[in-house]
Image (cartoon, rainbow, N blue to C red):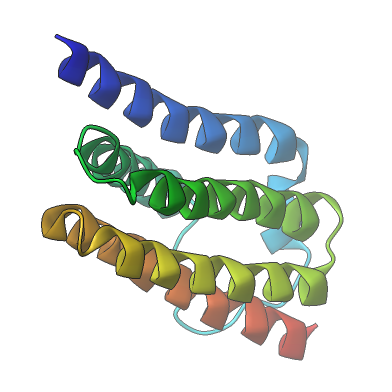
Length: 153
């Protein structure tokens, strides 16, 4: 039962970060109507769908690490926590402040923190590391979008 609670908590934690981010930026989501967007920009409805899936995968991945017996898990989970903070921060700077360059810098830091998370997870639980890969790929794509928005606006 303890393991199930760890998974539920971890998934809810990740989803809460995403939910708080959405609430904090809800009044500024119409930014795409005001700026030039790059080719390959997905429709707006896709973002919450993808992010919900990613937050669930991130939560499962973190729970796999948390419930492991590894003495390296605290360090790995710290880097994951940093990525959650950076993830939340990006939304605030991008949507609320429209600070696209600062947002891109945060996104690069987020991208690096995800890579470090994967590296730290891998020796503890390979599946947990692989579950971070969709997150890395999506943030890479977000980096393209963010950088293109800087160039186009």
